[in-house]
Length: 237
Image 1 (tube, one colour):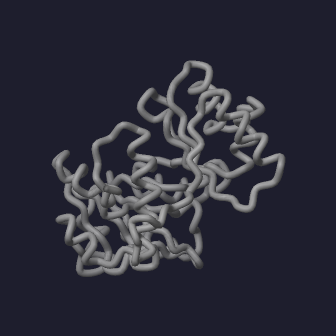
Image 2 (cartoon, rainbow, N blue to C red):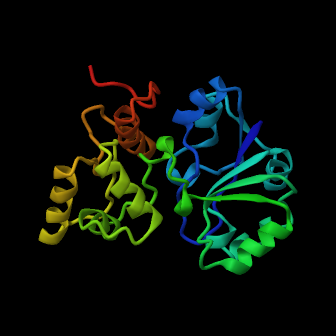
């Protein structure tokens, strides 16, 4: 199976759906990884960083969509209906599309994807099976507040509530700063309830020289909390 990672086209979107550090685990599972040229550049990951991890770089975007069985995007068509319109013709029947889709709002986009015969997995609606319950794809302070007060207004908040009441591991990676007193109290509440609060705060003792090394530092901490044996960045010694 080939996993394809195209360059994000939404205006101002600098993220990439897959970082080089996770490629070894995917390759070990028998998967191939194909990257669009420049897909990770704005996130600090040049093409060579993927090649170094045995990933492959496609000739162009159309070639990537033609070859890939699974397409990974940060913003799928549902959250990128204008710039992402050109990708509709590139999608093929039975292809799998994974990313943020905003499916409850972008219903027309979902109908168009269904018309192409594409299978869509929206991260906002991630199924709450045991293995998926540690994942929080939308860890804003609003989400933290909902979790802290047991609101369960969304699937993410409901999943977090289940994790806490069943004593399962829950990792929250809040991105906002600075923090108000209300934010701090909410973070304290979720920590007291059993969640792991892991702010996206990189370390500098490993003397990073590139932006991607700062990102990898945070990702490594998350992977360690999950108990996965994946070496993304150099350990402090």
